[in-house]
Image (cartoon, rainbow, N blue to C red; front, side):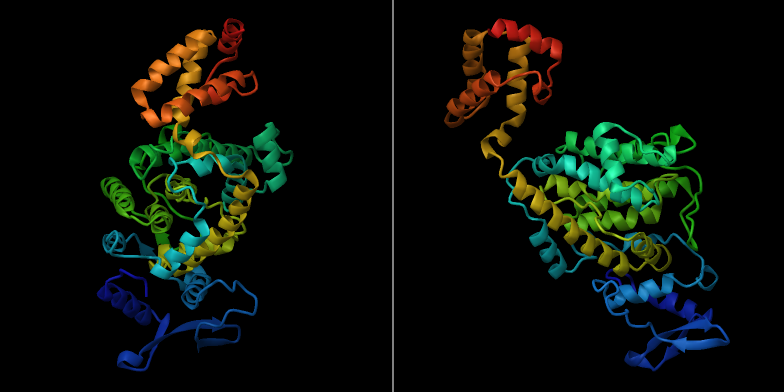
Length: 431
């Protein structure tokens, strides 16, 4: 049973399935069991319990996940139409209700830890950003049915070469993922579970892909349907806005980053707050806790579309999270293994330079823009550093800035947000 679901709600849903002929009761009291009724060729109303997973078939899927998979894979005619249930969200109390067990949260923490928790938010993301741009853009697009290959995605994002034989929408989808991820990496201390961040994620992911451009970044005000399911999303605009804000408030209150990530993967698609692109928004938003806490990102490496969609159908139609939970846990472990290897290849960053990264950018940029020579810059650095830095850090900071200035060239000026014209004008003064 899903944690946090009121017992009366669950019992009511089970009774409804029994009355509709989809389940049959066996036993009494605590020994009561519900058996699925299905049809086979040449035989009707045969009872069968959820079959065991075939040998080697998704060994990471729990018994609860397999049961949900069995239920949502039935023909749509055998599944009961349902609408949005507010009590599914209302029952969740942050830091008291948990979709992930304490054992699972601890296990994911071991996989996701990269030793950068003391560093500024977004530090680890910047280390793996170029690889993540390709992996997450490709995997998230692939889950939407995009047919670009990984190599074609890499060429598009690194060289700007669109692959032949693909729809323009597929190219746009991948480029939109890149833009959305870059937004998160550019402002790691500002992004969070708030309407500004999530609506802007939607605007970037939906750019040039939805019929009404005015709908980009706006909570929907009209009904929508979801293909392949008997679930009908909430249709009242005022309630959609209210539930959207409630989801963001709850997510922001959750302390554990993995629980936070999974919560938004469940509730953003379930609400369908935007006219389209809701699943993509939830997958990018699930990375916000990873960025803020300097954890391995979630790139959805190796996730099968049928498992991801099946997990969501379990949420949509049954309000059961176990199938999607299993997909999330397996996907995160797979992603973490990949990016821990990337971190080891990159080496460890200098904590001092990371701590004063923004100050270094400002100092170098201002010296260049004001065309200071060596003597002027030396006096200015000492005076300005004395205003903002602890005394113990000033000498090393001054040395670092001098090294940055000596090593500045046209190939690295973007690191300090300098234009080529500014650099060329300063270079003559520096000589």
